[in-house]
Image 1 (cartoon, rainbow, N blue to C red):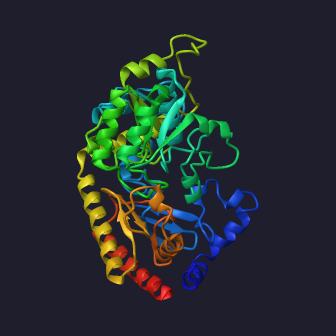
Image 2: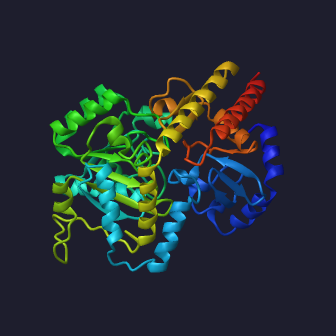
Image 3: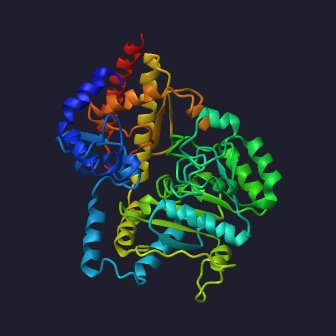
Length: 450
């Protein structure tokens, strides 16, 4: 780490450091989720509103994490808070069915018509796991094809070649879980495809078509690949091949759903997947997940008809908080706001300006980066010609960490090694400031390397 950035961070965040010392005695790593952890220690947040977060030391940051994506209107949007308050006065958790489930499902289907039937759950991880379960049950096959470096959640059959990749593993084709505690045998249920490599992906799908229950992908992978879009011709061919061999295509739109537009990545690419997983935005900042797709698939293997379930035909999916009315009310209010406003025009304009501005400043400083993303998504890669996880793993990660710490000590919160999100609460002035701060940090990086 650049010493100047570290010292500035220590000086600004003494209370966070104190809390961290307490926290790590009772919370592993001082946090309740890995995404909250950062070096040299996590920031502890006291307040968030609009485009800003305020830490326990009183430092104000322009926030480009926005809750890891769900806060497309910014933190604490009035329309969502008011909807939640109203719902709290009615009921917060009956566990029994409410009309809100129907209303939000109808709203989602209106904008994503490939989701003919929908089930709600609690997280994006659950949504992807259940979508894959549907595909396996429907096809009566066990193997799912996924793309190298795509992140679909934290369950056992999802953490295969997602976040724990190294160039050595890629070169040796060591297909194994990304973390400890996952049985190695689970890797046998996953087949890997190279992202944005049309010829090799088609070849592998054709060779293994008879054993594939489905193909799952992030149209714009975020967590591990940093907002590198799937190329349109690649997507078109993938859809053609999966249809030809009757292999369900699953879109993981936990991030892109209702972020690229009301129709998500399916609308952006002009492709109808067989199944889709959603999360984040559809809960308005509250916990939620949803999966759905073709009626013939969902009705056949998800609809409960008797108890006990026919274990040869039906999947099981429930959950105490699945379809909880607070998350549904928040999500419904947020989507209705998106329908009636120019949010997408605003955030897409800001996204393009920010990506272009950061790239231009780096080029002028002769700092080698590539800014990727679409719409309100952006990521700064310290490499060039980035198209897949193989390119990402060759990045200068030390420079990337220094860049992000440099932003943080200058009042810009871009999460360490994660895609950034722009919200409707961000302003053009904040984008200009972020570009200027980035330029300042690039200058320091350049000097330290000289």
